[in-house]
Length: 358
Image (cartoon, rainbow, N blue to C red; front, side, top):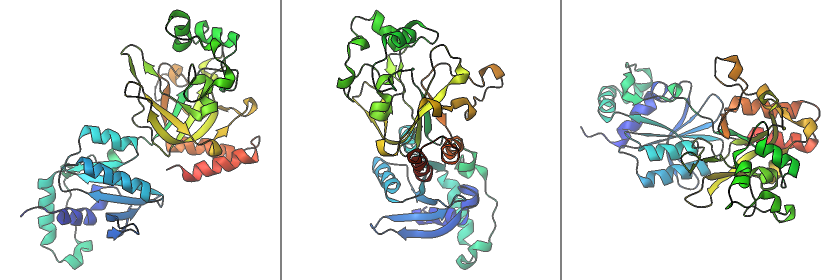
């Protein structure tokens, strides 16, 4: 018997708890939206989010990627899951980037399961129980390590509220002090790099600045930096549009335990200037939360490294970014909403971000 897409749909419709995720609630099969998009299977999960499942009989194609991205931008409060026999690694990276979940399956084993299923009366499918072989699907979602897509950036200290070029003293400290920032030192050592002290604060724009650190608040954006050893940009493959970015810094001379969060924003867009540069992450000014020094939140009050060595629990070594899970993002935003010391506007923005990052 030739395996049809409808057969695959029937199997996943019956055994979604084992093959996709437990505790889903089936809402419909072949659901048609107002814009004529058709959903193979629609569920809600334990967080009352819509779970859109798109099933493919064959390996994923470029056209399929476009279709899946359309689902992401169309259905509110939703998760999108693509299920196919094989998904190319390049597509997986794109899906992870945009928060799309995926599962691969064995066509042969799904066909065998459908044969068992089709022998029973279709009206009684809900009462049928078959043992599900674990190897039918590769890594069901509950067993996969899901990166939520929020991100924290390590930003060099700036005494212009990250909206202007550092004063000469801070510039020297960032170049040769305790923390020794690579790009600051590079301006001293590389004749091809324009020294940041020659820039005028009033002329800094999204296309004209010496470093992202000095304009992080002004343009509301940041970059994961550069791998100088390999001479190529770092990329946050698992950071996602719609998730939350936290900008963190550390005053000169302070230990890593004093790292603080100074700005929070929803990631509105991720873009590259050109193919030789890394990605840049930008937020929406209207809903961003910019904190004053007396409001800074201690980064390590929320985030802890997975190391079993206490020395490294609250330590940020190399790299300019760390992934932040939804639980931590919720805790930070909830504290701004519920604790004193924050303005009405900051609380409103925190509530908006809490309700709208997905």
